[in-house]
Length: 295
Ligand SMILES: NC(=O)c1ccc[n+]([C@@H]2O[C@H](COP(=O)([O-])OP(=O)(O)OC[C@H]3O[C@@H](n4cnc5c(N)ncnc54)[C@H](OP(=O)(O)O)[C@@H]3O)[C@@H](O)[C@H]2O)c1
Image (tube, rainbow, N blue to C red; front, top):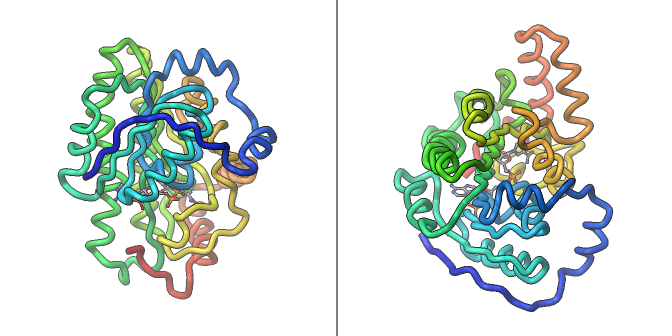
């Protein structure tokens, strides 16, 4: 595990960053959001995809960030970009959350920070026939997608209660609403996340801690390549970050993106066994060849 200190730089904004950001929805009442969930947000999976997009939206309203992922170089690049564009504090923690000690190493790297928001976005998927999967990869996926989420939520929830409030965003998926053939184990990890978040949304509400499950459909990110999928009609992470954060404190689950909401709505009309078959057909169309498991 490697930790970098927070620092600010005066580098120029990333090309196109301002014009792109101007077209995207902004958080309503950003000062209130920052006061409620700041001063520090810890974002696992903060070097790429949805985690990075959420980190960017948080930095834009002045929150300081802890970015977490395995690869230190990607973390440092993301941190330098966020510091230069938003002039916010960023600490990076390079840790493998699939390892037994990973979550505790992360916790040990931030004892001095007043973390008001946990965003658990680190995760990966696998695809293809269940009997062809590699057991050690499936176990690593279970560890990152579920065990690390459990350990971090269990650590931070009582601390958020103690400090008088805060928030927890857990990244689930549309596949977590039912079984998904050709993606059986990944969908099961996201069902765990969905169920955990739904329950904690109610359980922690009285303690002023907001919990939400974010359940996106396909998103352009590093996810598809690692999962052995090709995604169609995928959303851009930056288009989903603000809708996810806007829903925090309002709902227990958010399905960000119009297409994903439409798909969820249509599937809800079907009995659960039919949903499983439909999602299996959709997934088989997304899997490369017979599918392969992620490394
Ligand atoms: N993309 C989609 O279509 C989609 C749809 C629904 C839900 N989701 C969920 O959204 C979340 C974010 O995925 P994404 O689409 O943003 O994918 P991504 O671009 O591949 O980002 C995954 C992030 O997690 C980190 N990570 C992966 N394994 C890790 C480990 N063992 N320890 C620590 N960090 C690890 C990655 O960094 P390193 O590789 O450096 O570790 C990266 O920062 C995931 O939970 C995913 O299941 C994705």
